[in-house]
Image 1 (cartoon, rainbow, N blue to C red):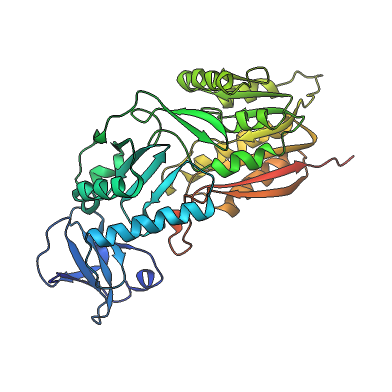
Image 2 (cartoon, rainbow, N blue to C red):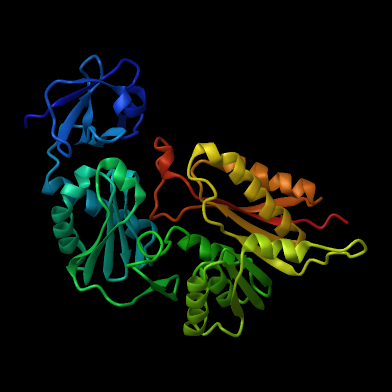
Length: 401
């Protein structure tokens, strides 16, 4: 195996030794021989100590994505072992799930590859040139491992342009169904694998849907940013008296209402098209002599990411504080606020600080009763901070008088 060697500048190896797989172009001292974009190279520190092998791309800021710390062949056997290990992890930690993320890129030591399983249909994304060039091999192995009905690619992510890759949506194997029906915790959902968010829908809250629903028995629930109704439908099934879901997407609300009927829950849950910020503001605005009476036992806040980069974090924090201020005014004493943040750039501590600032301003005392993270099919490797993005808490609004 004759590989070109990428030598790093002094001081650039520690992060890789700790387990992070990305070699930035700015960290490279030189290459010992020319390397083609997309091919395998070996990486060494400035003292010639081996750090691993991975895919090279001179056009990307992430010049090398390490795949293994040893000098191994990145061949069919390698991918077979990694895919089998990823599946085994899901079987171990989500044994009853039939839909889940099978491969979560860096979390499964396959940087640049995502594979989601929706029942008998697989959807993959390749965000690195090296992985993209090996799509035929990956499809072959996925067929052998899982015998799916179909395999689709949803390579319409903006990040592909940084690898010099075009967008590409296609059927890689089989025949794509017109509608994909999946089960999450025993509830039926329909996933739009051709046009839906991400690879079709969000799978990272699967465990949290069930956990938050435990607070909803006998409750009046408000589910903000409800999308397809994941939290709302689970709350209704758990025994909520009534659930009201809000989302600004007409298509998402129409689907959520259909799913309520499909799951036999339409008598207890309804969805409304609304801008959540405006709706909350309208419900919490009072006249000079009016007193706001809280009406909800449980409020769920699961907004989309308010920031995609560090430069916009301050604006995002203002948005998070605003929705918490409004929501806290609508929760009865003794009620529950379940809240989530999916921005990698807002860490767990900073997110809780925003919630507590809103509680201070609304004179609410909160008792934390649960902490949440992404489902086990989106594993977290602490040495790779990018693998952790979803965080959440449940708070009891305490009776203080």
